[in-house]
Structures are given as C-alpha cells and as structure tokens.
Image 1 (tube, rainbow, N blue to C red):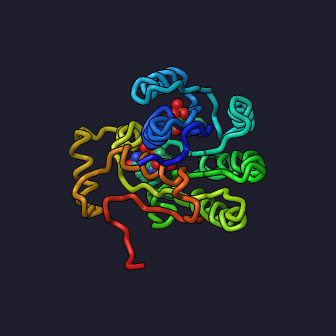
Image 2 (cartoon, rainbow, N blue to C red; image 1 turned 30 degrees about the vertical axis):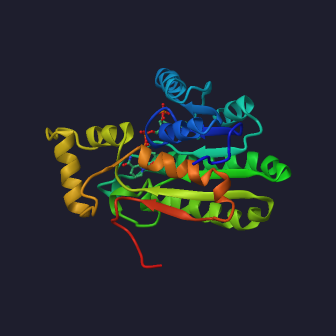
Image 3 (tube, helix red, strand yellow; image 1 turned 90 degrees about the vertical axis):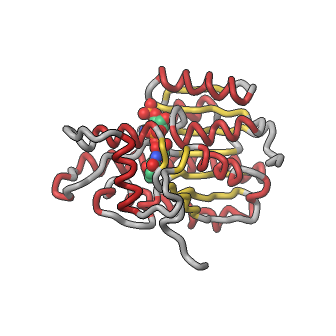
Length: 262
Ligand SMILES: NC(=O)c1ccc[n+]([C@@H]2O[C@H](COP(=O)([O-])OP(=O)(O)OC[C@H]3O[C@@H](n4cnc5c(N)ncnc54)[C@H](OP(=O)(O)O)[C@@H]3O)[C@@H](O)[C@H]2O)c1
C-alpha cells in the first residue's frame, strides 16, 4: 500500500532506538525525507545509517534534547517546516514508592513528556496550517489512559499531553493538520531493557524471565511483548493521506490488555 507521503518532510524526535526508530524507518520506507534526533550521538548516527541502509533513502540526524529550549531550537533549525512531526522519548523511571518522587523528577518528566512535545507542536503547526497539510503523532504510553502507581512519571505528563493534542486536533482538522496519539503497552525496545536493569538493582532474573512475569501479571492476551515495528507501522499510517478523517484518536497497541466494545 502506498501511503501517499513520498517526498514529505518529517521530524522524528526521539528516534535513535525503540518505537521512534521504528516509526522513522516506516516513514523512510514510504519515501519520506526523515530527520531523526536524540541526545546520544553515537546511537543516533548508527540509527540513521541503519535506516538509510534498510530504506535506501538519505536520513538526516541532529543531536537535540527536546526537553530543553536549546534542543528544540537545534531540532527545528535543522528542519524548520516539517510536514510530519512524530515525538517520543524513553520510558521514565518506575515509581515503586510515591514518596520518593521528587520535584526534580516531576520537572524532568513534564519537560520531556509534556512541555517539550507541546512546544515542538506549537512551533510547527502554523506552517502546516498555511500549507493545508500536516500530520502529528505523539507516541506516549498506555499509562496515560490506564493509571498505575509505579508509572507516575510516565502517565500523568502524557495524560496532559493527550488532552492538549486532542483539543488541538479538533481545531486543526479543517486545515488538514491531523493529530493522533499512540499509546503503547509492553514492547521489546532498548528503553524497556534499560528500565528492567535500572529499576531492579540486584535482581538476577534474566530479561526473558522479567518479560514473562509481566506477561503473567498483565495477562497480555497476545501472550508476548510487542515488537517496535508493531508501533512504527501504525505511526506511518497516522502520518499518511489515509489519516485525513481520523482526528484526535489515541490508539492503544498493547496486545489486547485494554479494550472496549466501542
Ligand atoms: N517499550 C515499551 O514497552 C513501552 C511501554 C509503555 C510506554 N512506552 C513509551 O513509548 C515511548 C518510546 O519508548 P521506547 O521503549 O521506544 O524508548 P527507547 O527505546 O528508550 O527509545 C527512546 C528514544 O528517544 C530518545 N530520547 C529520550 N529522551 C529524549 C529527549 N529528551 N530528547 C531527544 N530524544 C530523546 C532516546 O535516545 P537518547 O537516550 O539518546 O536521547 C531514544 O532514541 C515512550 O514514551 C515510552 O514511555 C514504551
């Protein structure tokens, strides 16, 4: 299927690994000119080379932390008028005890998970609007919709972000600027492997054993974690011509844990 976005220009912020990288690859495979960003240069350069190799199209990169004004300025200077904006980050640290969540933790989580994405959208929406074409996808988290105490730094900032994007989606739809969100459940990514290691010091269980424990606790109907590409493909669809009448939706991709009849 041709998604009708060949030659469009995309920023994928937070794309040297995981769901962001998979989304950048899916867009590049559609012939989109992609600029990817992250904080760590080495992994970013490697990701750009990998995407180029797989998609056979040049991929630009810029080191930029989009939780900071400087990072956002650097990102936008590299591609000031994107047609497509995809934004994500790493899973924030887990919060087994709410008493240990500090003001600094909240400020960082809000800067990365809510304010950064909002400011990037604010800077790019007017251009999309004037060109009567734009697509924005925030890859956030299931915890934005299904609150859980050990994801306090992940869910609340992204619930705010979801509220903002759905409100904006309504006002921008008539100009063909389409905003949607993806709410991933558990997927094999570098970020989730890092979280398992960092948040369970002293735990000697293997990654596979940890994964199985979570599959059992969440009773994931698919019986496994998702792959990063399970999200990337839907992200590309939300960035496509076919999304023109799909406005302000928050799609859950979690192997079937959370669903509703309508
Ligand atoms: N994987 C899962 O199972 C899972 C579950 C629920 C929700 N999610 C959500 O899905 C999203 C993606 O997760 P993931 O597992 O794909 O993460 P990941 O593997 O850690 O990849 C995150 C990417 O974002 C970059 N990044 C992080 N913070 C950034 C910042 N401030 N500025 C620029 N780039 C930044 C990282 O590179 P640098 O570190 O070099 O910056 C990396 O390229 C997150 O919102 C996460 O909360 C994931």
